Length: 604
Image 1: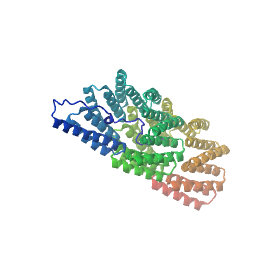
Image 2: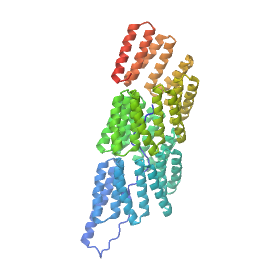
Image 3: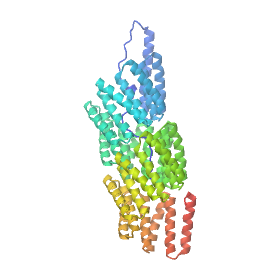
Image 4: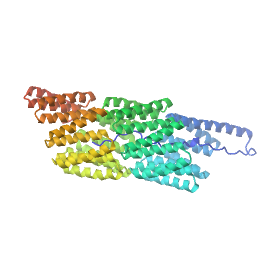
């Protein structure tokens, strides 16, 4: 099943707080203003400036609510003394704060006021910054075309003014907008235009942010090793300039990428480093993000109960700081963990808690992904009509926001349902629809996944040669990517295929290769599945003692990770083996245990 994992998007685009821009104070005509009023006004301005700076420090620590309070106080003072620039800075920073809380409509209201003030003042540089802020806010609402309009305006104004910093920042934000549209190659073009400008003007923080964004684009193209190179370059710069938050952000995405490469131990070690830095600098939102990513890493290790602990810690922090998108994303992660434990109804409960939050904050991408995950869970419960209904709700949202990957994932999952209903030709049609979409956006993991699903469909049609060809294609891509988990899964499927054509020695060889990889990368669920496959082969060859030995190795693994569905399947296979050995009483006991678990978890 193609499932979507959600966490608040970690973009390395550096946020420049409008209020931190240093400008000279306007001259006061002493003949026109009384000394007492001037002194009062200066005192008030100093207090507003202090509150502005205080809010910036609070936001850097992830204290978003406190930052909003400081900036609202500053805004009131600036408005009272008629300081339009200070008013604009306060409004701009409030916009950034509400963006951090995923309240993007509210953020846009503030940013539109900022734009209006700077346009009245004729401050082209600040108009550019406001347009970029609005562009990024609309991008957060998945209104990417509207975002691009604002960003192109910012770029045009910056070019006319000869504002090199504005040009570089506009190009970088355009790259992010196209990345969100799954146009990764185009995103890379914009980042590569932005990078030399930041270098020429000596803006090292800008250089680091673009390098990080290039890493994200290559990550989305499943070119993980290239992504790691860019992340490491960004990390080095942040370390050199003493930007600890930048260091933590870089470590976070590095850790996530190593997890995608099935190097979970290295990934977890790096994520722990990021978590420590966030804790030291008091960045609560960063702490929550790191905890959530650690949860996903332990999910990949099949340590679902440990993963759940991390996701629950993340939820608590997001709730404390009022980050609704973070709360919803953590609910999705909890749903994924429980679904992996075959606790599908519990998973659905978490997805259903997340869905209205995404809808309320107008996060179209989060809403669509949540519907997709609900569809997967109902598929796992064999409630196919409900699953189809949910996936068909997700499809037009992905189309509307231009998310081609989400569109392909939804089509793939519709294919999975057709396959479960034994409508194999229909399934093949869906998989063949998703494949060119993944190819168009350069998503190698998606390509490999579609090829794998085609292999499964042709295997179910007993077209084993074609099935093996698709599995081999999938295997080659995973090997090129360095995705060891994908490699192991493809090897397992090849083992099943060769078993189906009674080439048992070859099948055993593939299973043994996959078992070794699963052990090396710590994927104990994958290991248990490989042991099961081997057990089936030995059972077919009437080597019942060997089959029982393998099933008995798999059984405690499924029990340890809480995979009740895997436990039930293993007990059933043990029952079949004992029946083949003529031990009917033992077989019945095992069948009864298996059926009891199936009833308990609500599967046939």
